[in-house]
Amino acid sequence: MDINTSIRKFGFQDLFNRKDLLWLIIWIAGLGLLWIWNALFLNAPAFARLQTAFLNSLLTGMMVVVFSLVLGWITGVSLHLLERSELKTGFAILSFVTDMLRSIPQIIAVLIGYVILTMLLYKGIIQSSFIQLIWIAGTISIAVFLEVADTIKQRIDYYRTLDFVDAMLCCGIKIRRIINIEILWKNSKSHLLHKLIAIFGVSIFLQCSIDFIISVGLSTDVSLINFPMTLGNLLANVDSKQDILALSNLFTDLGYLPEIFKRHLQGLSVASCIVFSLLCIYMIANGFVRRKKLI
Image (cartoon, rainbow, N blue to C red; front, side, top):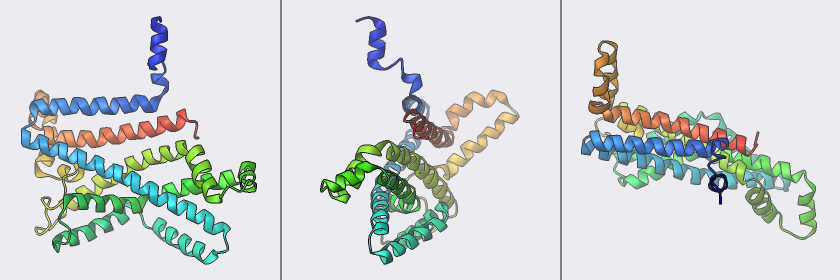
């Protein structure tokens, strides 16, 4: 086996043509380098907080993807079935509910969920950090799942115009199996995966934004200690804000640059992690849609 065959076998030759995979590797490699640098120069307590914040944000984003897929799948399929059934009242009610949710800006919907969570924390009803993360993920999912529902309904409506659906119905195959298996699972996985990648990025953005806003404006009764550590509220930490403000020293003393990456790592690492992750997720989604020719 010559070297060119080996390269093609392992896929390195096509790596730059697969922008989604390339940016996934860049994301993992970049986070790995950041982790190594912080392990060397960041103090142990701050390093532990940074790791916990990143893992919590990542876990929340993954739960948002799962919740949004389930809610979007159920809603999209239900809208299609109700629209073609005799239950026009059910379709009208479900359409009204979804339209109401669309009318609320996503960031406002998530903010409302955080306000309710803050009240529950104040009253001591919710104390577990994991339950709080589930609540946050559920709140974000309610704000974004309609994007999945729209994609699912569009795919179903498109395939219902083709002959193979009527042919399957004539063969006695149930419409639910045709929709869930033949249309969505076998022929729409790429579209759904692209949408879920985008939702993962949106969930990270919304979570970090609202966490930062809420953390800055918390009362003394509900403090950062009550919330699970995430990248957003870690960015709102006093130490992190001081680290970022330390960048202003570069305007008067460029020689301070080496000290920035050793003495002010927590704030810079959190900010870099958020921005770098959002950039990479966007590029992954963009590369995926172009490779699969979904546009």
